[in-house]
Image 1: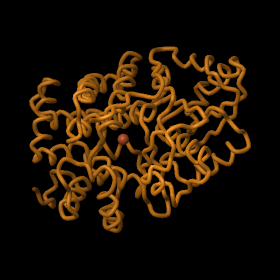
Image 2: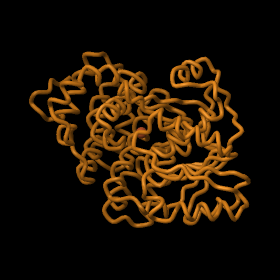
Image 3: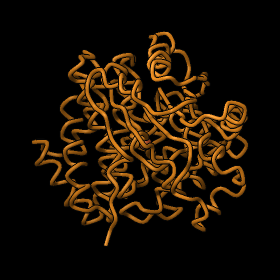
Image 4: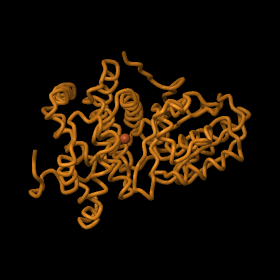
Amino acid sequence: MKKLVLSGKRIITGQGSLDVLSEMNCRRACIVTGGQSMIRTHVIERAEKLLEKSGAETMLISGIHKNPDFDEVAAGVRKLQTFHPDMVIAIGGGSAMDAAKGMVLFYEFPELTRENVLEKNRAGAIPASRSVGLVCVPSTSGTGSEVTRGTVLTDRKQKLKVPIMTDCLRPDIAILDPELPMTMPAHIAAETGMDALTHAMESFINHNMDDIDAGLAREAIRGLMKWLPESVHDGTLKAREKVHNYQAMAGISFANVGLGMVHGIAHSFGACFDMAHGLTNAIILPVAMAYNRQDAFAATQLDELSDDCRVEDIVEAVDVLREKLGIPASFREAGITEKDYKNNRKLLLEHAMLGATMVNPVKMTKESMEKMLDRVYYGADDSRIACG
Ligand SMILES: [Fe+2]
């Protein structure tokens, strides 16, 4: 038996769906957003007006950084404690949504701390229901956070990304308005789009896959392979809308099924070098997919994807897509010096073995992971890399 969840209460899609904020039944709404883009493009102003029209008072928490950390979340919780919102609305990219989810978690359950949150979650001590409403309005097309039960917060001291997966983090409402991802510059559209493709592919080859999620992941992969180039290079509304919807489908799939070592390694590099999540995934994805072919189930699933996408080899096609989208082939090419890599290799290895790596189709040992890290750092074709 497997219990699947497809989203919170509802998903609103289509152009103009941000307008649904005027129908929110709340009195005090806190909007959480990232750097400047949502303010500069007047999306926040529009959201505030819509909420005020519905009779709600609003507060804004802005300036959330890439890879939000526990301190940033704690600062947000202190603001919530003075405002007492009955709804938190994240408008922005994955970082804004992760931070908002973290704030809701620690605001709603004040007994939780950085130190005990994972243990309490493992013990089932975090209730699924909460009193504060949670709405996510993504402006980038990748994380699927608006439909998932997870957040990823960074512990800067330990250079560690900490995924927290618990039912109370699944947003009640996901708003997929294609006008928001129209604000993305091309490189963000490329990196976040490759994050979505990674979600769909890692869940599709995960041994925990089921028929319902396979349908979502398969269609997401087919659609992302088709529409990502137009979304990145031409930025048309149609392509951005397609990618926006496919990334949510990929999100639903991985939330039910799980991911794999692309994410384990990506979190390790991302936390260590403060790199964007989508970029790290995009570099690792083709290398890890080729490696996972040694698992019989993964190999069959990848062959099916090749047929679905009408390409000779889906792994090669993903690598071609990566290049077409202007994403480097290795972390060395992405600008991490060999000295920095070598100095951090031990920590990278330790952290890359955690999280989603534990549910990778091919079981990783420290020895095989060491080789994998060299492969993604130097590039799969580098002669220094031992194969196998
Ligand atoms: Fe991801």
